[in-house]
Length: 228
Image 1: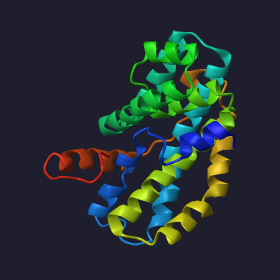
Image 2: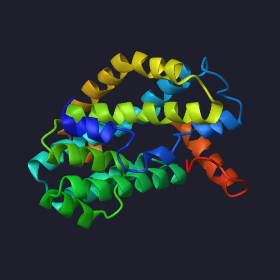
Image 3: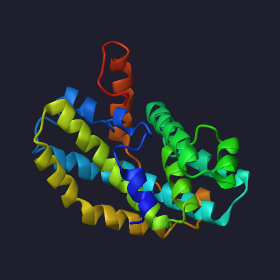
Image 4: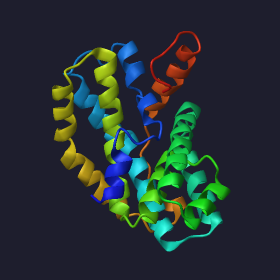
Protein backbone atom coordinates (compact mmCIF):
# COMPACT_ATOMS: atom_id res chain seq x y z
CA UNK A 1 0.00 0.00 0.00
CA UNK A 2 1.44 3.38 -1.00
CA UNK A 3 1.62 6.51 1.15
CA UNK A 4 -1.50 8.16 -0.28
CA UNK A 5 -3.54 5.08 0.61
CA UNK A 6 -2.19 5.14 4.14
CA UNK A 7 -3.08 8.83 4.48
CA UNK A 8 -6.61 8.31 3.13
CA UNK A 9 -7.16 5.31 5.41
CA UNK A 10 -5.86 7.13 8.49
CA UNK A 11 -8.60 7.95 10.99
CA UNK A 12 -7.02 11.40 11.38
CA UNK A 13 -7.63 12.27 7.73
CA UNK A 14 -10.19 15.12 7.88
CA UNK A 15 -12.70 13.54 5.52
CA UNK A 16 -15.55 13.29 8.01
CA UNK A 17 -15.60 9.51 8.32
CA UNK A 18 -15.47 9.67 12.13
CA UNK A 19 -19.11 10.80 12.29
CA UNK A 20 -20.43 7.80 10.34
CA UNK A 21 -20.91 4.34 11.85
CA UNK A 22 -21.87 2.52 8.66
CA UNK A 23 -25.08 1.13 10.14
CA UNK A 24 -23.44 0.01 13.38
CA UNK A 25 -25.27 2.53 15.59
CA UNK A 26 -28.68 1.41 14.35
CA UNK A 27 -27.65 -2.23 14.74
CA UNK A 28 -26.68 -1.55 18.33
CA UNK A 29 -29.96 0.28 18.96
CA UNK A 30 -31.89 -2.73 17.65
CA UNK A 31 -29.89 -5.21 19.72
CA UNK A 32 -28.33 -6.83 16.65
CA UNK A 33 -24.80 -6.08 17.86
CA UNK A 34 -24.39 -6.18 21.62
CA UNK A 35 -20.87 -7.46 22.27
CA UNK A 36 -17.50 -8.14 20.71
CA UNK A 37 -18.77 -11.60 19.71
CA UNK A 38 -21.29 -10.03 17.31
CA UNK A 39 -18.81 -7.74 15.61
CA UNK A 40 -16.99 -10.17 13.26
CA UNK A 41 -20.20 -11.16 11.49
CA UNK A 42 -21.33 -7.55 11.13
CA UNK A 43 -18.00 -6.36 9.77
CA UNK A 44 -17.64 -9.29 7.41
CA UNK A 45 -21.13 -8.70 6.07
CA UNK A 46 -20.49 -5.00 5.67
CA UNK A 47 -17.29 -5.68 3.76
CA UNK A 48 -19.18 -7.84 1.27
CA UNK A 49 -22.31 -5.70 1.03
CA UNK A 50 -20.89 -2.17 1.20
CA UNK A 51 -17.14 -2.58 0.89
CA UNK A 52 -17.24 -4.42 -2.43
CA UNK A 53 -19.16 -1.76 -4.40
CA UNK A 54 -17.10 0.97 -2.77
CA UNK A 55 -13.91 -0.84 -3.78
CA UNK A 56 -15.14 -1.34 -7.34
CA UNK A 57 -15.92 2.34 -7.86
CA UNK A 58 -12.79 3.51 -6.05
CA UNK A 59 -10.68 1.34 -8.37
CA UNK A 60 -12.55 2.65 -11.42
CA UNK A 61 -12.02 6.25 -10.27
CA UNK A 62 -8.30 5.68 -9.71
CA UNK A 63 -8.03 4.23 -13.21
CA UNK A 64 -9.97 7.19 -14.65
CA UNK A 65 -7.86 9.78 -12.81
CA UNK A 66 -4.63 8.23 -14.08
CA UNK A 67 -5.95 8.49 -17.65
CA UNK A 68 -7.17 12.08 -17.23
CA UNK A 69 -10.73 11.43 -18.40
CA UNK A 70 -13.14 14.21 -19.40
CA UNK A 71 -15.89 15.56 -17.16
CA UNK A 72 -18.57 13.43 -18.80
CA UNK A 73 -16.91 10.28 -17.52
CA UNK A 74 -16.93 11.57 -13.95
CA UNK A 75 -20.63 12.42 -14.22
CA UNK A 76 -21.37 8.95 -15.54
CA UNK A 77 -19.30 7.21 -12.87
CA UNK A 78 -21.04 9.19 -10.13
CA UNK A 79 -24.49 8.54 -11.62
CA UNK A 80 -23.84 4.81 -11.86
CA UNK A 81 -22.88 4.59 -8.19
CA UNK A 82 -25.95 6.67 -7.34
CA UNK A 83 -28.11 4.16 -9.21
CA UNK A 84 -26.56 1.30 -7.25
CA UNK A 85 -27.33 2.98 -3.91
CA UNK A 86 -31.13 2.79 -3.49
CA UNK A 87 -31.19 4.24 0.03
CA UNK A 88 -31.29 8.02 0.09
CA UNK A 89 -29.72 7.96 3.53
CA UNK A 90 -26.81 5.94 2.18
CA UNK A 91 -26.41 8.28 -0.76
CA UNK A 92 -26.43 11.34 1.51
CA UNK A 93 -23.85 9.77 3.83
CA UNK A 94 -21.59 8.87 0.92
CA UNK A 95 -21.79 12.36 -0.54
CA UNK A 96 -21.19 13.98 2.85
CA UNK A 97 -18.00 11.96 3.28
CA UNK A 98 -17.11 12.61 -0.33
CA UNK A 99 -17.39 16.36 0.13
CA UNK A 100 -15.20 16.30 3.24
CA UNK A 101 -12.63 14.12 1.52
CA UNK A 102 -12.63 16.38 -1.53
CA UNK A 103 -11.91 19.47 0.57
CA UNK A 104 -9.03 17.77 2.35
CA UNK A 105 -7.78 16.18 -0.85
CA UNK A 106 -7.78 19.44 -2.77
CA UNK A 107 -5.41 20.89 -0.16
CA UNK A 108 -3.14 17.84 -0.14
CA UNK A 109 -3.10 16.88 -3.83
CA UNK A 110 -4.13 19.88 -5.98
CA UNK A 111 -4.63 18.80 -9.56
CA UNK A 112 -6.43 19.85 -12.76
CA UNK A 113 -7.94 16.35 -12.82
CA UNK A 114 -9.45 16.93 -9.38
CA UNK A 115 -10.70 20.35 -10.44
CA UNK A 116 -12.47 18.82 -13.44
CA UNK A 117 -14.01 16.07 -11.33
CA UNK A 118 -15.38 18.55 -8.79
CA UNK A 119 -16.65 20.85 -11.54
CA UNK A 120 -18.56 17.90 -12.99
CA UNK A 121 -19.87 16.63 -9.65
CA UNK A 122 -19.33 19.08 -6.73
CA UNK A 123 -20.50 16.54 -4.13
CA UNK A 124 -19.04 13.26 -5.38
CA UNK A 125 -19.66 9.91 -3.77
CA UNK A 126 -16.95 9.00 -1.29
CA UNK A 127 -15.51 6.00 -3.21
CA UNK A 128 -15.15 8.12 -6.35
CA UNK A 129 -13.19 10.96 -4.75
CA UNK A 130 -11.21 8.41 -2.73
CA UNK A 131 -10.20 6.60 -5.90
CA UNK A 132 -9.57 9.79 -7.85
CA UNK A 133 -7.18 11.10 -5.20
CA UNK A 134 -5.35 7.79 -5.20
CA UNK A 135 -4.93 7.90 -8.96
CA UNK A 136 -3.92 11.57 -8.96
CA UNK A 137 -1.21 10.85 -6.40
CA UNK A 138 0.15 7.94 -8.46
CA UNK A 139 -1.56 5.05 -6.68
CA UNK A 140 -2.97 2.00 -8.43
CA UNK A 141 -6.61 0.96 -8.71
CA UNK A 142 -5.95 -1.92 -6.32
CA UNK A 143 -4.60 0.57 -3.76
CA UNK A 144 -7.80 2.60 -3.97
CA UNK A 145 -9.93 -0.53 -3.72
CA UNK A 146 -8.01 -1.75 -0.68
CA UNK A 147 -8.47 1.60 1.05
CA UNK A 148 -12.20 1.58 0.35
CA UNK A 149 -12.52 -1.97 1.64
CA UNK A 150 -10.58 -1.17 4.78
CA UNK A 151 -12.65 1.95 5.52
CA UNK A 152 -15.83 -0.11 5.14
CA UNK A 153 -14.86 -2.09 8.24
CA UNK A 154 -12.57 0.22 10.21
CA UNK A 155 -15.20 2.96 10.58
CA UNK A 156 -17.88 0.69 12.09
CA UNK A 157 -15.24 -1.02 14.23
CA UNK A 158 -14.20 2.31 15.72
CA UNK A 159 -17.86 3.18 16.26
CA UNK A 160 -18.37 -0.08 18.14
CA UNK A 161 -15.74 0.91 20.69
CA UNK A 162 -17.48 4.22 21.28
CA UNK A 163 -21.04 2.86 21.32
CA UNK A 164 -20.53 -0.30 23.35
CA UNK A 165 -17.35 0.43 25.28
CA UNK A 166 -15.67 -2.63 23.77
CA UNK A 167 -12.05 -3.54 24.37
CA UNK A 168 -10.19 -1.67 21.59
CA UNK A 169 -7.53 -4.37 21.45
CA UNK A 170 -10.14 -7.04 20.79
CA UNK A 171 -11.83 -4.89 18.16
CA UNK A 172 -8.52 -4.14 16.46
CA UNK A 173 -7.77 -7.86 16.35
CA UNK A 174 -11.06 -8.46 14.54
CA UNK A 175 -10.21 -5.83 11.93
CA UNK A 176 -6.73 -7.31 11.50
CA UNK A 177 -8.32 -10.71 10.98
CA UNK A 178 -10.18 -9.34 7.98
CA UNK A 179 -6.99 -8.36 6.14
CA UNK A 180 -7.16 -11.35 3.80
CA UNK A 181 -10.80 -10.68 2.96
CA UNK A 182 -10.10 -6.99 2.32
CA UNK A 183 -7.21 -7.89 0.03
CA UNK A 184 -9.40 -10.33 -1.90
CA UNK A 185 -12.11 -7.72 -2.34
CA UNK A 186 -9.51 -5.22 -3.57
CA UNK A 187 -8.03 -7.60 -6.13
CA UNK A 188 -11.45 -8.51 -7.47
CA UNK A 189 -12.49 -4.85 -7.67
CA UNK A 190 -9.31 -3.82 -9.45
CA UNK A 191 -10.01 -6.37 -12.17
CA UNK A 192 -12.99 -4.22 -13.24
CA UNK A 193 -11.20 -0.86 -13.04
CA UNK A 194 -11.16 -0.24 -16.78
CA UNK A 195 -14.72 -1.36 -17.48
CA UNK A 196 -17.47 0.91 -18.75
CA UNK A 197 -19.13 2.51 -15.67
CA UNK A 198 -22.46 1.02 -16.73
CA UNK A 199 -20.98 -2.48 -16.50
CA UNK A 200 -19.39 -2.17 -13.07
CA UNK A 201 -20.67 -4.82 -10.62
CA UNK A 202 -22.21 -3.81 -7.32
CA UNK A 203 -23.73 -6.31 -4.86
CA UNK A 204 -26.80 -5.06 -3.06
CA UNK A 205 -27.09 -4.43 0.67
CA UNK A 206 -30.81 -4.27 1.52
CA UNK A 207 -30.26 -4.76 5.25
CA UNK A 208 -27.81 -1.86 5.41
CA UNK A 209 -30.20 0.26 3.35
CA UNK A 210 -33.01 -0.40 5.82
CA UNK A 211 -30.75 0.30 8.80
CA UNK A 212 -29.65 3.58 7.23
CA UNK A 213 -33.21 4.72 6.59
CA UNK A 214 -34.24 3.78 10.11
CA UNK A 215 -31.28 5.64 11.57
CA UNK A 216 -32.30 8.83 9.78
CA UNK A 217 -35.87 8.57 11.08
CA UNK A 218 -34.71 7.98 14.64
CA UNK A 219 -32.10 10.73 14.38
CA UNK A 220 -34.96 13.20 13.87
CA UNK A 221 -36.58 12.06 17.14
CA UNK A 222 -33.54 11.73 19.39
CA UNK A 223 -29.89 12.73 19.41
CA UNK A 224 -27.64 10.07 17.90
CA UNK A 225 -23.89 9.89 18.24
CA UNK A 226 -23.33 9.32 14.51
CA UNK A 227 -24.78 10.90 11.40
CA UNK A 228 -25.27 7.49 9.81
